[in-house]
Amino acid sequence: MKIPLPTHSAPVSVGKVLCIGRNYADHAAEMDRDVPDEPMVFLKPPSALIRSGAAVQLPSQSRDVHHEVELVAVVGRKGKGIARSAALDHVAGYAVGLDMTARDLQAEAKERRHPWSVAKGFDTFAPLGPIQPVEAVGDVQDLTLQLTVNDETRQEASTRHQIFPVRELVHYCSQIFTLSPGDLLYTGTPSGVGPVQEGDRLHASATGLDPLSVSVERPE
Ligand code: MN
Image (cartoon, rainbow, N blue to C red; front, side, top):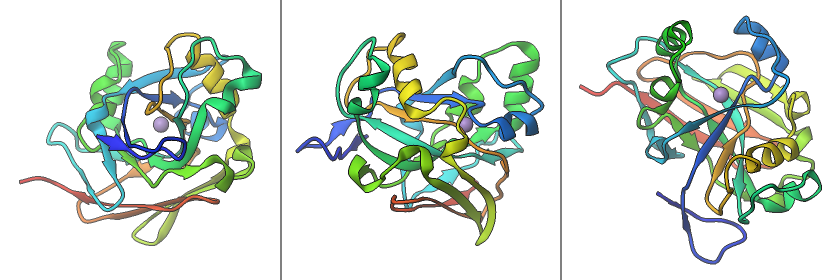
């Protein structure tokens, strides 16, 4: 899939989809997990991506798919070993996103010490809202993230409660991966995660960003 970047004249292909686990203390607590002392990184395949207006497809392998609303940073400039002071210069824009998670498969993977690639990586498990330029956002660590399901608020929190701010996440990930234009960074979810059902309408928003709307379907 190609996405438009505010800093580029032509759309670019989505590269890595980096995701951060347990980046809000209240979510770590609801999952009965300790707060990590360094960022917990996992990846989703680019094939998981869908845009606003599309539908999350519930996979037959899971009976418990959860929503996780997240701020997404979109990389606009290539870099490796990026200093904290330069980290935000590598971000082209922001979007609101959903890290859809097969919670039952994730619990099983945790128990068996297996990776999360299956629980997090199904097709349609990475909805991404419209990408806005950095200037539209203001202070990225002072945004209110919100998710409603069928018009009922399920998640609401400020990005000021992130354990590792966006600057730190870009710095940290770039020690491991070369970051390139079109890479996405899902920065973790606050508390309030829960299951979605066939027919649900999910509406995710964040201050200064255009909202993301997806429906939920179960394929025949
Ligand atoms: Mn997440």
